[in-house]
Image (cartoon, rainbow, N blue to C red; front, side, top):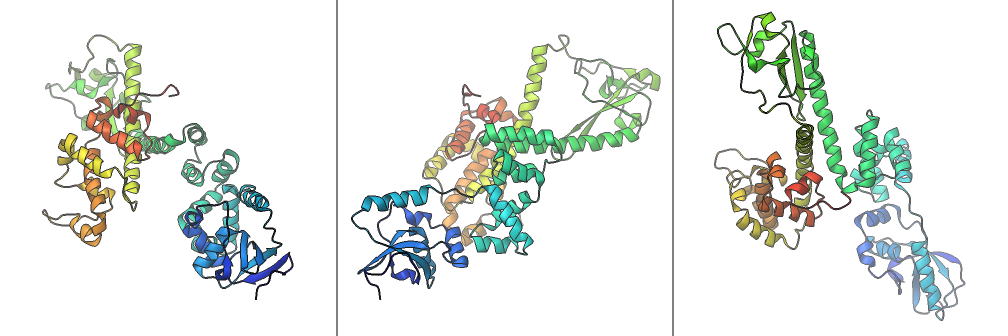
Length: 455
């Protein structure tokens, strides 16, 4: 039985359903009762006592509003409550206390969290158990444990202030300090561009590994390895296409394998493959003649300006390849959301009008759209990848339509997109930006967006 004469400073266990959540400075408390917070209260109860007052009408929360509502919602039988003296005349003091209680807190850093999770792992708790006990998503716990196990990841969190996700991405480059340093600068200066920079670094690494592997194969044949491809206007070493046999036939790559004076340039690609281009120092010494294959550059050697333009073109092509991977991953995550943007219907209508030729080009298969929605392929020429999906997920009709429209335009993009921007593709990229996607510099060219003064 509650009374108005209960002494102040008493700690009691009280049924949360009987506690009144009084006026509080936090006005949108329901939105803060996240699944993680509720799971934590379910698993651990209320750890920090709720502060409340008591009068003839019952117990009233002074501060601890979220804890009280969470305990009521998850059905706890009792919670610790610290009863203090009521002073209804000093409402200003109540407001001040509630502000101070909420504002003057020092949140744990990600560095604190990952070390705590690591300690729990050493105590024998799995990532799933830690997630359940702390009300944290399991994927975040797994990411944190991965970072905590890495000296590089731990340093990036503690010293640089990176997020868990950023640090986790850079762990894969911890054997390349220069790459980590470059990406760290991007994360600090241009965080929106960070995923693109990481993907470009991955592509460059994969290409370098493919090139190194190809060079090793060619080196075992006795061929000289070129660090750079000879310029198009260079005459020596001679390109394989310029060589002719004594019968006037073109010389094949197989015919020069292992011969003296053969040089090779290996170009690695981000998919792990490599392309070998052969050159010969002295064709006549190995029985071949030289023919004008029409590949000699007209107008003399390239100017410095032309060389710079070609270098920029190559760099932009690589940036576009990286951006494509990031953009399509973002699209897949975007289409996995429960709700679509409010303007999705207008976007669909516009795409089906101004970009209908791009969308129609992919309508027969909708392969990319299905991949973006993780819809499994079906067998048979007339099979429809979306039929079973829609039957199982009738509420996803809007997602399917949007995926088909966006997938159709996306499938039409490529390196030529940034070289020759088109309005319909530009509108598509601009729409993604309005939905939260960050365009890389080369994508901004395709989107017809002028760079800002800081870029």
